[in-house]
Image (tube, rainbow, N blue to C red; front, side):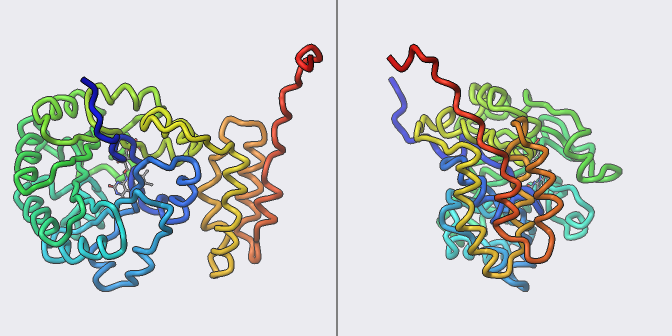
Length: 337
Ligand SMILES: Cc1cc2nc3c(=O)[nH]c(=O)nc-3n(C[C@H](O)[C@H](O)[C@H](O)COP(=O)(O)O)c2cc1C
């Protein structure tokens, strides 16, 4: 019997990445995949409760499906922010339990929350009581010495008991002392098997695997074991990788624009943002990898890097950076009939 439920957007997710997956980046990625679930950068509850809320929360409706990732550890604050996520039109609210930076540890949230699953459960319960949106958790397989399979199991069952049904698991532990956030994304070894066993033990939960997936074949192979995949750096550095995602992960065969068409589709957006005073580079910095591996890639990167940050830089910079369209393959004489 075939399963006729629609394929959920979390089958393929683009990871939350601070300073990278801002609204301009997401709008750009959305030109390439209509279906992938996108995440915001982590936004702290403090920034939303006391800062410029609209600056952190505004997005273009075409960015959906879109999840807001929150950083925080106070149930009441997280509940208030979860409600904001719903009011603003997000599709999901996600709690960051994976970030190991000092700044985040000082605020006692992020990965260090893995040490206190009961606290995470309280946060999830408060968020769920405040919104109808799905509340999900992104975490590691362990932290410091607390990294056994039993520790992970205790974390997930405790948080699931509070009603979280989807977990995004970065398949490596974090060392909270001694490694920088960047090292913590590369140094602790990946253990996909641990995440697969978590899913096998909890068929009732949706488990999304993250970490070190560099191409769509590797990502698709994971779906034999888990419900979804999340890719971060690979998508950011090679965004056109998303071009095959809708067909391969969502059985959606709509035509995907080629790289040149993606750039041209960005023009009205770029011009709108420039008119609002957004500098060109704030948008084009996310587009540098678009022609990766293609003729003209270096020219594209170089022109955008050097010229987009100049005062007054406008669309003409993008036009100048655009590599010539590859010539159409020549049709042999005979083929003309
Ligand atoms: C520049 C950068 C910023 C990141 N910021 C966040 C963040 O705000 N929240 C979060 O949960 N993870 C963050 N991460 C971690 C990613 O979401 C992801 O878990 C990690 O990069 C591993 O996935 P990958 O190997 O596919 O990149 C960040 C990663 C990078 C490279």
